[in-house]
Length: 172
Image 1 (tube, rainbow, N blue to C red):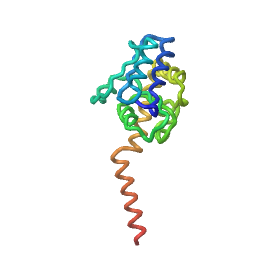
Image 2 (cartoon, helix red, strand yellow):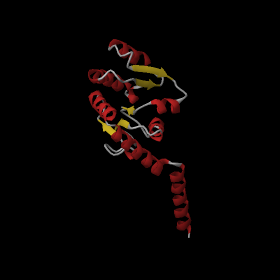
Image 3 (cartoon, rainbow, N blue to C red):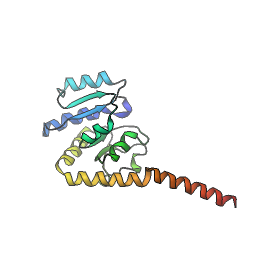
Image 4 (cartoon, rainbow, N blue to C red):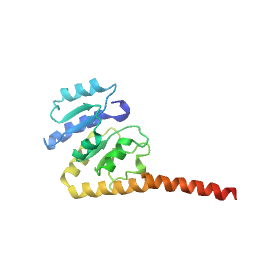
């Protein structure tokens, strides 16, 4: 729970979502320096029913299996493991365009990309996924196919093989 991960955007998106529906729960996983501040923000906006802070959670596969979508509003990332885990679980993704995320998530193709610090956009895309299960499924499957192509063990092995092959050819 740090500035880099921008979890406050999830809480502010809950404020927006609540204007349209009561049928949602946002789960924030992790520990960190912003835990007290984020908890206070949830309480101040009367969102305890809608936003749950789980702290450290070891059973991520089970949590992802129970989720309908995955949101990552970070302001700075590389290629987050949490994103790869969500995509592997075939969850549709809503994220920001930071770090290497663009290699996996292309807006409206393999997920939704929203602007930085934009809870309204996060809320709108969440509602879109809630209302269009076919789109949700299509985005999730597209992201998983792309992940397998780029980040699977087979893809990594092929990449290493290409490097070794080029090194052997260069020595000849």
